[in-house]
Length: 343
Image (tube, rainbow, N blue to C red):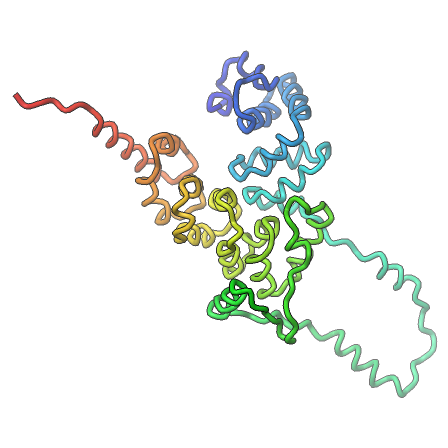
């Protein structure tokens, strides 16, 4: 893999890689294909792209949904494979490791409502002056329309904790009008039941949610909802996501490995005992170049021999982490050397 990445692999290996004939896991085969599809040799590029187009659809979606997949592979999938692959957009949108600029391009843009356009276009032009009795109402309506919408109510951390406790206890939470807050069906549906339309609707509904509605959605919603809310700029929302009882180890690992979440999210994961008891979450966190050094330093000692070696070769992590991994490997090697007896 490293030789292919560096462009130093023998010609026969590169050719077999472009044919998908190397005995490697699907994730590595697909990464090699995306690398070779950008090779300077036209024949190699064409063969790699042809092989990619023949990859099993379910296998490709699984790789594109895997948070451990390299961002460059996700970017290639979005730019070159999306048009020909049903369901690939969903897999990419779910992936928390998708680069932010690619995410922005994939998300559907709100369209102008054709009903509103038709109504405005069909409305007759007003030629007669309004009756004097109606003028005060019209002025009030104009003033109301020109007045900016009320800003969403801010919420402090203490209030957020109380709301989370209520939701966790199964109690109802209410909005400012006193009406109970209910999560939309797209939030509570099982992920396997979500359609493309559901996902597009979900993005729009989340964008319109208040802080309290987002907290409830984060705690009670499906994985699709959480994967969107984990990137919310409000740290109260991302904290609510990480406190959801529905998060699996695999999902937590994905968030720990994600390159498009805030530093605050990675700190919250590192400070959560439940997540830090799971080895794969720790491994994902320490290998994430966005993770703060003070969070990952103490994790070096908890890595096994295989992952220490991988960490020592990982050029994406800070130098101090890589140096500590190398030091830990040397210490283990010294400890296992046979000691000479005294004569």
